[in-house]
Image (cartoon, rainbow, N blue to C red):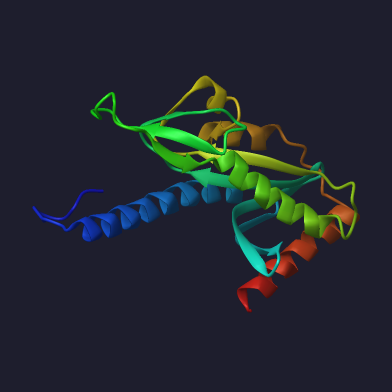
Length: 193
């Protein structure tokens, strides 16, 4: 997405434009993942807002359910080159054409972000059954080139499709369904507060 016409923007306007552009790109990624999840036939929640403790909430891009447990999906649509390690709090992002000595942009690790989402989901699930498993998935939908360490801890959109295809399809039962309902109710309650 490019600026309309030949606009000259102030530094503040450029910052607003970049934020707007990033939000649009993020929505494109989330929409692509939502489409794949909706076609899976599994129970799915999108844009779930759950309590995160201390009166805070957390927004989760997608959740889906299968007989093994509850799956938490964080979607990112980045460009450039991303480097780092799964346990790093910040990943480094560089774009082609930047000066080699230019400092990289530091972005909060989606793996760490989704770990916090998983804790919020588990906090609700354990009220029903502490043995319920919560799985974390970070799906990268953009054009970013990831370092090998980051490739190992993320999925592409086609990787998500493969994961969904290979998952068990039996109907979840018992406490897992009860926990899923509790999460759905918590999402509903969070939206109306």
